[in-house]
Amino acid sequence: MTHDIKYSQLEENINQAMQYALSLGIDYADIRFKDIATETLTVINGELTTSLNNRSRGYGIRVYKDGVMGFAANSDLNNLHETVNEAVKIAKASLTSQTNKVYMTAKKTVIDFYTTPYDIDPFTVPLTKKIALLMECDCIMHSTQGVSHRFSSMQFRKEIVFFADTDGSFIEQRFYQSAAWLKVFAASKMGNQKRSYNSVLQAGYESILTSKLPIEALRIAKEVVELSKAPVCPSGVFDIILAPSQLFMQIHESIGHPTEIDQILINDPTYVNQSFLDLNDLDRGLIIGSEHVTIVADATCPTGLGTFAYDDEGTPGQCITLINKGVFTGFQTTRDTAHAINQTSSGTGRSDSWHNIPIARMTNINLLPGNETLDDLLSGIEYGFLLDENRKFDIDDSRINFKFTCEIAYEIKNGKLTGHIYKNPTYSGKTIDLWKSCDGVADLEHWKIIGAINCGKGSPMQLMRISHGSSPARFRNVRIGD
Image (tube, rainbow, N blue to C red; front, side, top):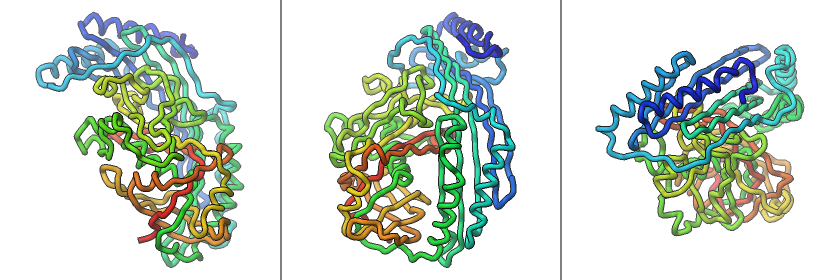
């Protein structure tokens, strides 16, 4: 089934390793082989500072025996049986000491192949062409008087994944990711101001071309200079609109992490943070937001970094509803955590590499669009602000109290943007109060998906790639400033 001649023997070797695991008396085993190639290019102030190619290839094997897991990883494909032995040895050694047994919810046996839809393999694009585009962006930003510092970067990633288990599944998946980041700074009496642009998608190089980086470079360069001269954002209680680039972080921190079920099941702050949710909230229909708030975990969303056909446990990618018109309706689960609450896995078992085990991780956590235009949202605000692009944040371990700092605030007066901007805007509050105050979400025309490559969680730490999609949304009576 493998689609590359260099992997022609891999399927047979993997299946043999799974049969060998069964012969050792275990209940279940699976293997994840990952071959991950990345290319990173960075230009800072006109100088190519990074041109790096990296490749990581290996596999991890999980075995289960009487409710206890053993895991071992190796980069040498000639040591498959030895790695199975090591995982079985760890599982058996843990039988006498592990009191909390772990069991897996059932899944279907699958033989399948999936690849990211793409037009241009980014690794076939000449290096000189990529660098030239970054240099062009840098030159455009540099030509704007008042700019003090420029940063342009691209990263491309190709991930080949094979999954097999003792139930007979064998899945091959190939993922392509293309990312670009632009950042520009201007000095101000209140410290450096920053404007950013990001395009981080599961797609081919065509996504870089359609993002029109030179145009975005000029836009943010002009804006950061204006921002450096702008007044500080007023403090008080105002109606606000959050742009998708800021809703990204609000969704991520206040909904994405709290609905990962191991935040609740594992009471170990060194492993994960905690959550304001508990298991009883599902049954009692906890109201988290207004009727305008429907949020899903969607592993089928085009171009999302959390999109796949199957997770790292062989469970199909799904779109599950976490919040339905304000009511909490679901957790993000893996096969073992789903079993603990008598459900089936929602397909969020993900690992960032071959040498780490899958844990409950976000896919694409998306706020579904509403029926209003952006003008409709603006028209409902007598005086307030549109906040764009997260700069930093603080949120407590239970994800209840938060404070976010954005790059820029656009003034809204009498239902329209005035053209005035403010620097250093912050907003703060409580998670449920904020989502309950949402009284409008813009339509699909304004919907945008935004990706990030460094969501940290776990022990050892895993840096996962995730995306969040949204349209601009309006929130009432939000505290701005200190």
